[in-house]
Image (cartoon, rainbow, N blue to C red):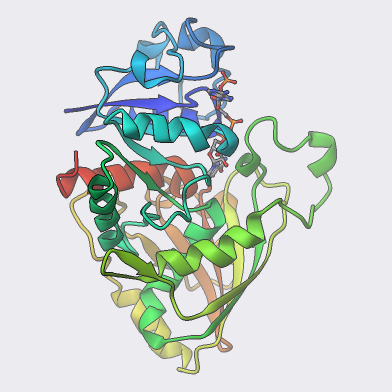
Length: 338
Ligand SMILES: NC(=O)c1ccc[n+]([C@@H]2O[C@H](COP(=O)([O-])OP(=O)(O)OC[C@H]3O[C@@H](n4cnc5c(N)ncnc54)[C@H](OP(=O)(O)O)[C@@H]3O)[C@@H](O)[C@H]2O)c1
């Protein structure tokens, strides 16, 4: 078993990590860390458990650690659910101390030597860990994308061989994407907010890196452009995306590609049976009905029609955050980087 810790363990994404790691076959969750406000206190006292699965009582009395590599000597890998401004320095400290970091934060995603990975889309980009090691780092940082970007690139992966030069996307994003304190109830109830800070820029840049090619230890961006418009809607969990791609092939070819899609990885515990599910009903996918497919790890695609246009939807704190990071860690372990 690999000893792991969670940074930001009390937050929205941190709790998802705790839930997913509670009974993991490869990873033993030994440390829970949070801010100085929580450090030193029992996890059960400082966490405001908001998931609809029961609180794992066995960790209720575990004392929350300060967020420092010195207080985590027995840990091989940490999952970071820290706010980006904190993650920026803290994740480097952990990686320099010889600890692997699988991060949800945006701070390091676009750095040339940091892999931005979705195992079903670009598993080979983990090769950038070797670049970090060549630079003298004992540990490593591996990141997973922004929660809307991951839904889009997973939905594009089965049809990437058709070639396209332009993707347009409009998102309808759940409020859990902003963390517990993120959006006031008075602001989102009976409302749509047509702005999410930095989100459009993240979708437009991260997707090109993820779908790019790793060549001579560098990622060459994918040769298409993305134009995004992002919106917050009153849904608790599950980001929905309307996507337009300039593919000329008839839709029946794309249906076949989705139906025959086989991801380039297998045998990882958190990988769902179907990473991308094509739905044929006119009114699906819907967040309330479809977000928990594949235990929240499946991206559902529907309304595939000429244009080409489709809708994609996935669980933002599982496939869009904690689950994505755990799947990355499983691939890292399988590739013997730990
Ligand atoms: N929510 C999503 O769907 C989603 C998806 C993808 C990526 N992300 C990213 O994941 C990260 C976490 O998001 P979230 O929604 O879980 O945030 P959140 O609910 O606000 O939780 C933040 C966590 O960070 C801890 N923290 C805050 N300041 C700290 C400090 N100075 N030192 C150490 N720990 C500190 C908090 O601990 P205390 O409880 O002690 O304050 C808490 O555990 C962000 O970078 C976010 O952008 C979120």
